[in-house]
Length: 81
Length: 190
Image (tube, rainbow over all chains, first blue to last red; front, side):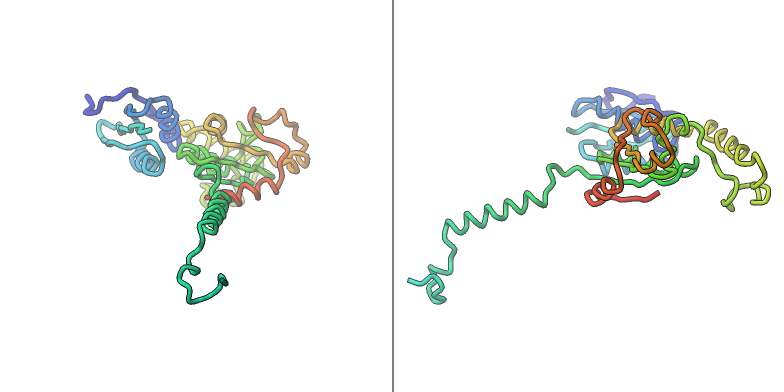
């Protein structure tokens, strides 16, 4: 599945459950440069709400989109600063 | 000319020196109310050491750290077990006192039942790829969470500082916890 976003890195947290998808997303985004986009692959259904809430409540990140399909939830987060 | 003449419009206006003094005064009080930075803080007091009760403080601490919070978790009484490297890997689930458990209390009170229910929960944690307590402690430490071990409880339970995870803060008491709570945006007792 190709992405409409030009992602710099992909984080695979398939299988992991709360709080790991959010916690590992945070660590992975810290390793990116400003402007770069992270793709997160998760199987935890709670990641849809959790990564949305995390991005909204966290400085320096922006949620560009979320996709649900083939049992995997895809999240696209950009580091803004 | 008196400065308190009420009908003199020129005298009602503060002088430049007065304004400058007032500005300086306001800047000082602003500096006092604004902390060095606007980092949000969370303070958790962890008092329980059963397998089920060890999760909430660790999950909230690591998640808050992911949100950019400065997090301190003060572990006291059985909450200290979470920071004890060896004990934290073998926390138990009580088979009595919880009506949601699949066994009645009279059965749960039989010898060895805690081990049965603990094994059951450990299997579920494994099957669901739920993070272990050890993983959550290590992850939280990596993310900058400050785990504090209550000195009074360390002495009471006769623990050695070396028995805790590397990075755990010891030599702290209730006053430290209170200070953290006073400074925090979120305070929780678990």
